[in-house]
Image 1 (cartoon, rainbow, N blue to C red):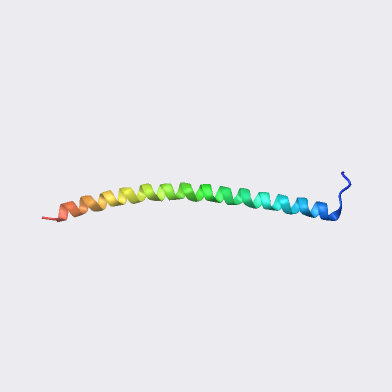
Image 2: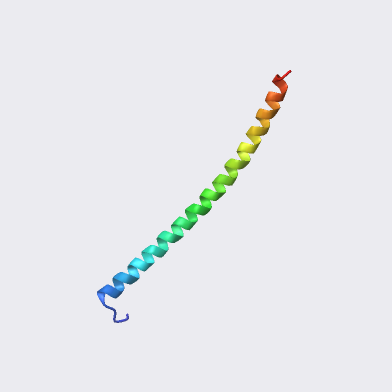
Length: 59
């Protein structure tokens, strides 16, 4: 093992923690983007159904 001081090790640990957190945030962002796309597609389908139903009820 390298001869590192406690402060050097602490700095490395904090850097790794920050990297892990950034990775998790990135993964969460991607998941949220995917969910948003799915919801937008469902909304489009529902809007289409509503328009068809309104078209059937208007004289």
